[in-house]
Length: 275
Image (cartoon, rainbow, N blue to C red; front, side, top):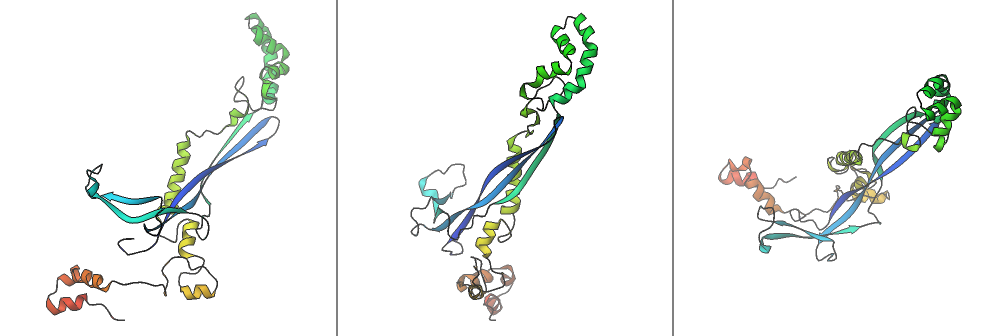
């Protein structure tokens, strides 16, 4: 802003959140659950102006002119002269959109399924189990499917079971996130690809809307207003623009192309082009 002499600036900070949905299907013998995690993001807007315009600004950007981890003296702190303040509502678009999705499906047999499958086998093995003194196991074997259901049906006969004689309940089909940092990194990468890397006007919907408005880029502000379309904040053919001709000529004068010349030829090289 100081470099271009701009009176107003906008900073779009990405604000993210997660949603999670679980869809369970199946029958009394087998269950399947699909868990989906979606990463959502929207811009949170900070308006930047000279400090005098909004002295209540949240913070004032500054740098230390000495290259060090910590600034060695107060007089070496250079303030930008602009203040940042959080603005919401009005014409500050905060459209939320999905930028990341992760899904996992798990399935498991139910307690009833294992009872029906293992029950007859337990009945057949009951004499051996009783001889070995496995009283509880023998009881299960004698009762067959009913015994298995009584032993493992605490969460219901249609509850999923991890394996024969294994854990039961909703935890069996719980998603394996590994770590939520995996999801956070996925969202961060998506935000970088959609919000940070693209040029202005081709990123998040909210940022693009503030920049381009709702009017085609080739139209002027006057044409947009005539069509009752928001022209946004982008520069258009009839947008007001100040030109520092002295600075521009000095820059051209010192450029590599002009520096190779001397005298009148160099001055003509640096002169403004009249169109």
